[in-house]
Image (cartoon, rainbow, N blue to C red; front, side):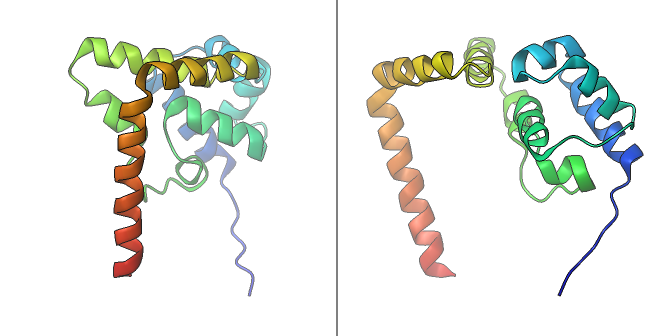
Length: 144
């Protein structure tokens, strides 16, 4: 069985523009952070054409939203951006912003360096959290 839905290009364009505006970013900043061209970003936001799957993935990570929300307006899971916006501690927010920019830089060497440095600095804490998350996921799987 196939389900076909027609995307409303204007609504996708509005959601892309809204997401960028919510983060107070220019198209040039988004282009720099994602490796996408500012011309394409502008064209998508003006409804000229739809972004590719790769572009949707990069934009959703940049804005802290889901691809489903970009395409359909669906909010089916908590948005990472909402968690970041709820952070009151300015130092913690700054650290999260720095890590996010490093990971979204589009430079695989910089991304790899950031991961190594993060593991060096926070290896034990990260492992404990990962173990806790794996335990929670495993218990969720057994209850379903």
